[in-house]
Image (cartoon, rainbow, N blue to C red; front, side, top):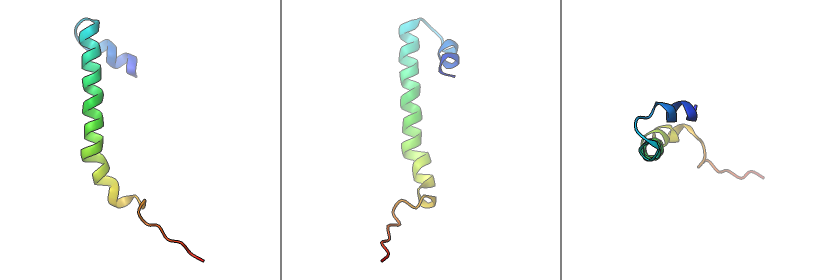
Length: 52
């Protein structure tokens, strides 16, 4: 998958590397600020109960 993406990026190797890095930054940013906050109410990570 990563090879397919890298082969389809335009330009010489330094430009491809920069575009690949930019792509990673965009994906991580979207995950942190859009996807994770949207699914947070459905993930019970803060429901900590201790039963005896």
